[in-house]
Image (tube, rainbow, N blue to C red; front, side, top):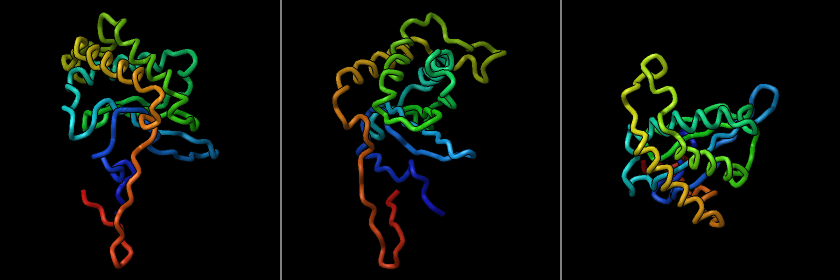
Length: 175
């Protein structure tokens, strides 16, 4: 069985940033792109607090799906299982630099919220699992990082690594 593409990126070298994770062609030859919106260095920084992550998910999903310029392009926004970032799936295929302002604005927007949208029992599968203060803290941290690193091309490019190939032609994966 092939290792999926996102597991073949060497996570020891990922830094926070906005990365193209994969591009898929669908039915009518149109493209959809999955972006890795990474807030934390995997296995180096502590993972994002579950309650803060859940609140960020609700707030940013609300922002993206209501953004007049982008709402028709949004397919999905959700957390990574490792709690170091989010996946964003958009129609089309833009370079990560082209969605920088969208991501920056989405995280800036978190500060305006006084309550988490949809954090009620009828609207959320775990409505008590939220922490708006933590969401704001993580959002501010990421906004500061993105602003500071806007001209750093490394926040837009996955680290490139070569995989070893065994004598019989199989790829060797150490994870």
